[in-house]
Length: 238
Ligand code: SF4
Picture 1 (cartoon, helix red, strand yellow):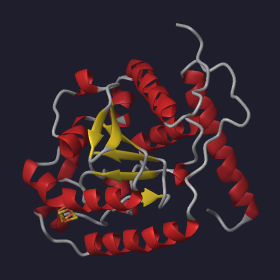
Picture 2 (spheres, rainbow, N blue to C red):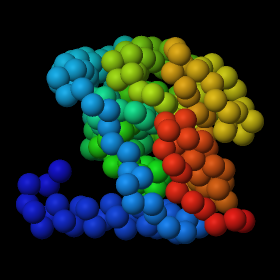
Picture 3 (cartoon, protein in one colour):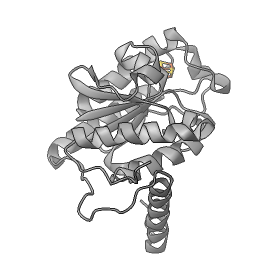
Picture 4 (cartoon, rainbow, N blue to C red):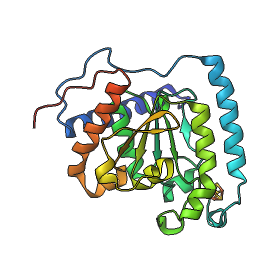
């Protein structure tokens, strides 16, 4: 969060704009007052979790368990609220993420932000991470052995965070977390990761290439809101 109040206002205005753009894309008619969710309570527990998350991030920062350590600029452990209701898991860092050490900050990340805001959350109220913590060269898909080596970090993070719902973004996230194949058939259908409800849906990078699929993702995200006991924003009939 920026220290300068004018920068903070710009930040809030930017988030509001992104929210309204996604809502407009999805045909949302009006936003209900009081529908905005808030992260789970438990601040002292949150502090402990935060410390443990930082320890994992530090371990990731010096990890050399697979060959991706040689080509990375920064590790990307993931970031967000230590006690989130909602967690998003993607595939791997891209160029922007590798540059900044933060998950989902490129074009796909901007779209993910719109999705999060359209659901009534702020980005810092959810946790965002990837299956891999280092960028594969030229953004190639993760190799099975890289996923197997890196996944324990993500699983440790999830066990600490205890989100109520995980949204798995794209085929690699679904394969990595629940070992299932076929994202177009799986999306929109609940599965479980270690007892946590997991919703498979498309990756925002796919939506950038295929905007009509945004409708499917919005349906999946509405289902997530229902599972969290939230009222999804109303959408115009097709
Ligand atoms: S991708 Fe994962 S396992 Fe490979 S070096 Fe990076 S942190 Fe370690």
